[in-house]
Amino acid sequence: MAALASLMLKCSTGLLVPGQSSLLNSVRFASKKAGGSSKNLGGKSPGRRYGFKKQDGNVVHAGNILATQRTIRFHPGAHVGMGTNKTLYALEDGVVRFTKEVYVPPPRSPDAVLVVPKLPRGAVLYKTFINVLPNKQEGKFKLVDMV
Image: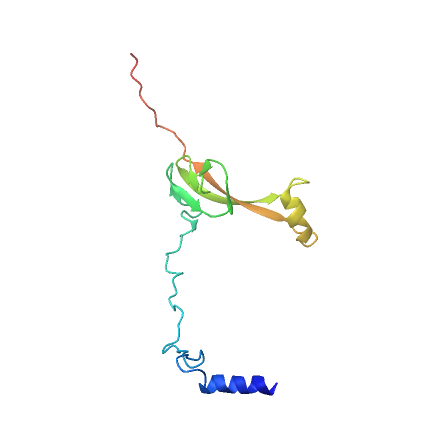
């Protein structure tokens, strides 16, 4: 034990054979710390602008976008179509109307299994529908040439 302690003392003081450098004397330390990046790269993109584009009572033309949404928050009603990205648009010229209707899920649907048991007793589920009431076509006739 004493021999091991003296060997360690000789190594740390540099009393080894000339020409050999001890590992402890040849260690260099960094002059600067390796710092991490402090850039906040996220959050610089603009918002997606989801929501209503036309309000209740607005006059719309066929093809006008009524609402944009990520998940199905608003459902298409009468004379309203849904795009592939769940965008609701008018199929005919008319006036926009919003309605809320009672929703009763089918017995074994995911809504009935996952949502309904968590609701308090007597609660009612509603769905919001966007409808377009078309303008009356009185007095507008197209003349067709008979050939």
